[in-house]
Image 1 (cartoon, rainbow, N blue to C red):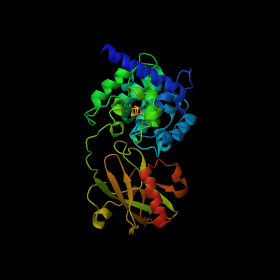
Image 2: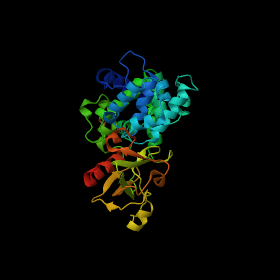
Image 3: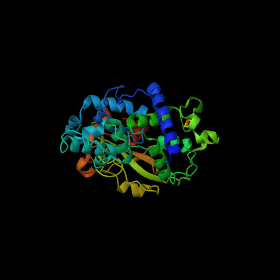
Image 4: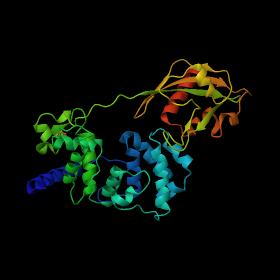
Length: 362
Ligand code: SF4
């Protein structure tokens, strides 16, 4: 890096840190100024914040910290309890990896998180972004986490016109150039805060921005249009029929999904496979969990995952002595409607339950 580039990066970092000292967001997982952050809290929050907003994460974080205040207590909890506490937060592989990671840290590593990026990346569920964030925030390492918010700030600051994802290596190089030797954790959090509160995707508040004088995107008059993105492929739609079955006592049949894959280990209503072609009645009935008289409920439930839209038709039936759990499969069990709130039901399944209750009643 040339001397001029170094000096310019230093002045950006100084302006950013001084802004952060005055405007840092107060977040439940952040250590108060002057206190050393607890790596467990930093790690837990960073895993929860992957693909998820601060507002959504805050109550989940509080609940986890109250129930499992240390990595050892989280490690000792049954996976099923952790999945249930995670229900609604999405991207459920994170919860399974969280638990596996806690077990590894509490067991093999004697309760201490590794204090550098390489050591952190060797743990379950910790990718390059989370390793850099934890290394910088919890341990003060010079590391540069780079997520969508920070990429946006950097693309604008340096007026990078190359579209994403091709721009990623360039944005990384530029972001690393900005990272200071000291206070790397505060710098990372300042970049996160700037992206979340000032350098917004639409309508960046450049007049309030501590980096305005250095911002090449603003000088070129195109900051808001950055970063540019290559057009996305259209999301396909998958279809399924879900079965809402009540027994004589009014309990509903649920089953656990396989441990690996989408929504792995979470509970669900029994359903057909999820596939791109819609299901005919004859095809769907073969995949019903037990023999019953099925009634298709009006309407459809729609949900969007990262890579596809999901459209579900719901069939209702009763198992009045005509069906059994063994017929429904080993992972199925009956759950009283009052107890559904305590089940590890992901958001899409909660939507289906609401739809079934509204259309078929209990
Ligand atoms: Fe973002 Fe505007 Fe600040 Fe540039 S000046 S970093 S575009 S908020």
